Length: 315
Image (cartoon, rainbow, N blue to C red; front, side, top):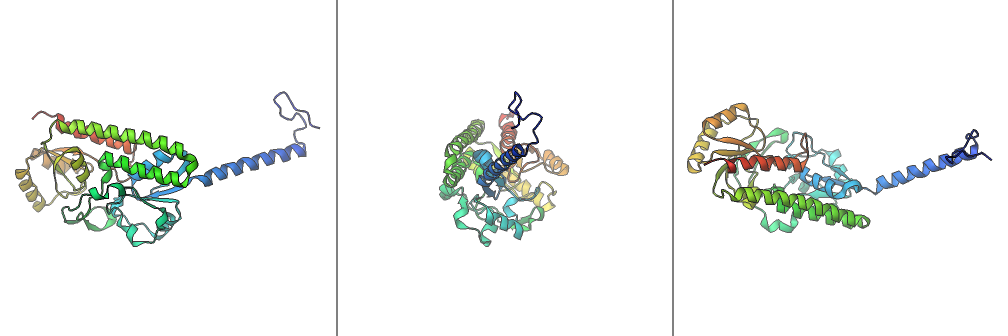
């Protein structure tokens, strides 16, 4: 029999075949436990980054979240390839934003039992109607913003409601982790409502302040936080043509704003022309795609502090 040292490990005779067998059995057991743990994780696919962030916050170590839209692509108009659609079909949960977001979902066969429309509780409050203009940004092809406004999460109280739907769907599939999901969604909703309270406080100081937007994507933001907002349809990476500037000047006469919300930093030329017109830039990123740095919460915190500037500026 092999002698053990004071640490409970075999001494000089550690190469004993019986000991080696025990070691191998232990390794196999640990590997099996690891594989079982990995297999138990919910496989979650989402159609935009806000839902991916929400799923990651709620599910924690019990989920694997996939948001496969490439960087630099506007997910609302992105169309996944066949292999990516097949990956969605194999997921345990497919989180949808609702409000006509990701129209490709309506054109492919996805298992209905796996679909969760996270905005369904407030579908009666969707905002419909928009500019109706057809344009293009990125490689997604031409499109228009006519129809239902889709950036539901920019009303942070609605985002908290979407998080509730995600937690309920995860709990249904993994009831053993119900307490974890409940605690995580509570913390996430607390963070979202802090953002909500901060924005309500900022915008209440000047409820009639006229603002412009470079794109019609801020409808829920404007409704929830009482923004006096009018939108054009410009792109950050394109300098507006002469007719666009003429329409802008007419809009500015009717709506004398000195601040303009942008989805991203506009071209230097666009910024300079706007400054000459007396209009300052506020970058307020909707956060539809995964940011290069930070996460959904840090992006929204930066947005709020940027939006505070016009409300804090002297008349």
